[in-house]
Length: 358
Ligand code: NAD
Image 1 (cartoon, rainbow, N blue to C red):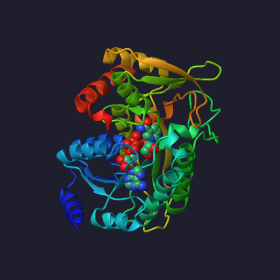
Image 2: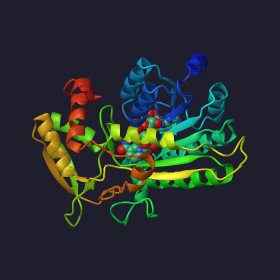
Image 3: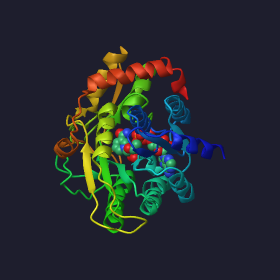
Image 4: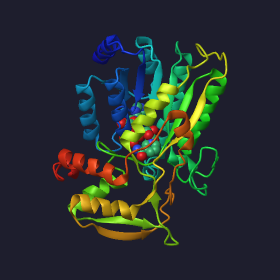
């Protein structure tokens, strides 16, 4: 098949530094940025994505075209397809896997719960099964989420705090992913690094996220829902700019130790780490709207609603001292600066709102 020729061709493009990375979810928001950054610095990169229709598939195709121009090929396939994964590992001896494919979003779980189990649980197991028997076994960096902290976690959220009250099915499947990773590390000696991203935003972002559809609705003059806690407390998010997240992902990959098993057998204790990647500076959602109003030069129609909305937490705030110490992670983009870049991209991509009708 044509894809196999393309994979063989990408495998022949030798990475300058001996690193070959399989990026799952490469047509996604974070996956596109991470793949491009890996390629820029000379790593071998192959993408995998099932191009599902959770949100506007034309945006995924546009990201794919962008990556294609920089020399990154994306195989269309599902992480649950073990046969396909084994074939990819036969062709390319991946040293690392950057696992970003997942069913994201908190509210969609009410409409389509099985897609969360399919991608975030079964898909992860399928990928780890293949990694465990690959030779060499790759080191794996995967996306967890700030949502694993759930309800009643002390603020700022610290990795040491083991919260066990997920507020949504999405959170529960992400938390299950961390437990599953633990077993593959323990039994098979796989090197695993989990990254708990905190509300990532930026150019090429996800249309289901608030900053994105607020922008669209402000431009259209539609009213936007702003949620307030039932006690009138602030609803805030630790918005983290995509370039900071990409730096954290690359640092996690660079500091990952090799897996210690081989061909499914464990040899010695392998690395298992979980880091917060946030901005350490939560911003109320109403302030997010004020910044967007100024950047778009359009007054928003606000409609204040009461929490709780099923699945949402009131507040997120990352303690990043562990990631700072181990990864040298240091976010440098404040919300105002990051949103300015997002809005500039949004207006050039959608031309002031035309394509966003899709
Ligand atoms: P995204 O939806 O843009 O990207 C995920 C990609 O994975 C999509 O392109 C999708 O088509 C693909 N995919 C889904 N299921 C698949 C499957 N079974 N097989 C192959 N491909 C599949 O989301 P994103 O914002 O880029 O998120 C990347 C990762 O980071 C996800 O694991 C997400 O849960 C996690 N995360 C994101 C945020 C955020 O704010 N964006 C916050 C916390 C965690």
